[in-house]
Image 1 (tube, rainbow, N blue to C red):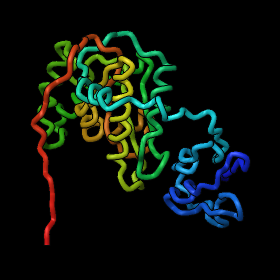
Image 2 (cartoon, rainbow, N blue to C red; image 1 turned 120 degrees about the vertical axis):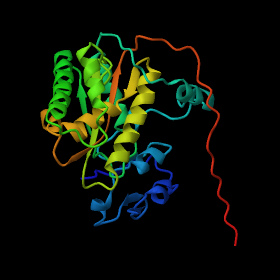
Image 3 (cartoon, rainbow, N blue to C red; image 1 turned 135 degrees about the vertical axis):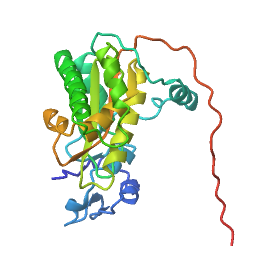
Length: 275
């Protein structure tokens, strides 16, 4: 049930909700907006109708407009976003102290609002418990060891031999001693499972760094879990039907950066078609 409701005292009949519905299932019925009969199943849960209504006259899915954050006056300005994008760093040194569980839950609830090809299909697998984190590290590295010993490393993965040697000498090249892992996966039936997951992690990275946390895009862990130790998905309770988009480390950084980078060599391809 969409539970689409209109507060007739607030509704100005501006038609914005009708015009902005991506699937065109809202119309006047007869004086106020309503879902066209028989069209409820076509709703894609985007909530455009809910968010575009300036007076807050529309409710859907039982949501209360008064509980939403107003956009006016709350959005970061362009300079702040520029600083965040240029100032984010891949953190390779983490504090041992874990991040508060409530903080992690809040970050993931916010990130779940990001865009996907089919709304609400992503699975966020997060490791908060430090003993579990240690076991995952050990299991991944032992899985790499077994693949090397049995000559089962996939082609192009031979460099994991040196990574294992570093591990045996006390260097955690894969996980960087980070206290947490975030894995985002998506069902294999959606149109773009990997991009959907990467978009979510991009949002998570910027949000995490805005509240003082550090992140690392962990391609080595993703490579190991997806290609070298496929049984790890089962151990992490990730469904077999899910495709892992990427893996991110996060935690409290043990380093401090003081200025943005200066990378101005953008490769730009401007296209102009002429007859």
